[in-house]
Image (tube, rainbow, N blue to C red; front, side, top):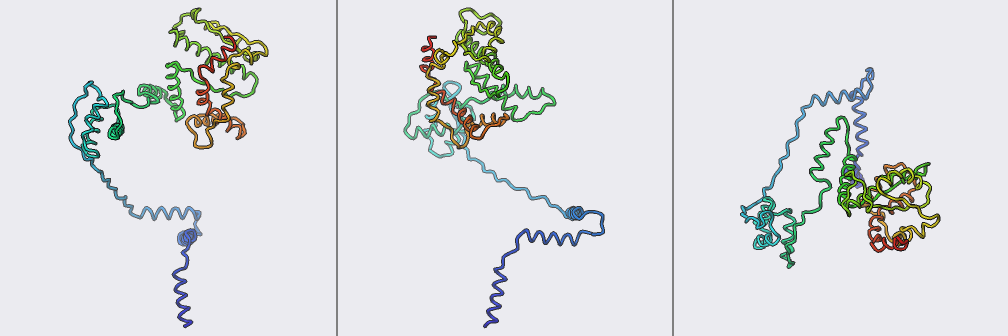
Length: 374
């Protein structure tokens, strides 16, 4: 009885014994290979002997290429469809599309073929998915109005603009381009479009507290923001283009105001001739009176922004396009900021454009100028 039980336990132990780990098996096989291959009398190292032995064994083996995988293609079932020409000569109206598609059975091959044929013949400026949505609305009881076709969002850059950038790249022999160059090109393209449409782009200054930094910042503001912005308004509202070379007429004379900061006054003195050429008069506010006389301080925009800030945040979730752009800007700058301060700045800049859209209403902007008597 005891002998039978011991033999049974021995068999069970053999079956249920854990298998050796891969590391143990690898080390054991590697030691066996070293004993079989490595020659202690050779001047070559043991590692080099193992590599040479592996290469010789691999060359001796006949390597068969893997079998090619066969791709099974499914052929779409289509039906021949004859469509009438659009009445306008170019595109179907939405009513014409509904009148053609409505009588066809839902989910049939003929319906899919008809939609595909409309897109192929360019009788509609949209894709099949847009036709499906429109037909689904019609069958759901909603009215389809003959409004203009929605072509979709305008591309970041037109084909001509991309072609121009490609030609510019081809002319730069010996220079390497990366994704940052393409990003800069797309940003410049969007900025040029906004400028041509009359929009004034926003600017962000990140400045170190070094000697002369504030003066250079004000000079940059005068030369690249203030004066070009005034001339853009003259061109938009009075059809006067200063780039044509003619002097600015007296009735388009502009007036600017600044406070008593020494750096700002110094920058204004440096650009005095530039202001004179562009028919702009620079005035200075009275000392210690900016909070009473300056339009931006007397208006409600700044106060409304400050009061609304605690209620707005982009949070710690996935960053949106604006936050991603600001994070890239901070990553490219060598700034020694505390993490809490950096996160606060990024969050503020990310929500500023949306918050300013709500606060900078016409009445809020005018209130400061009315209070200042301008």
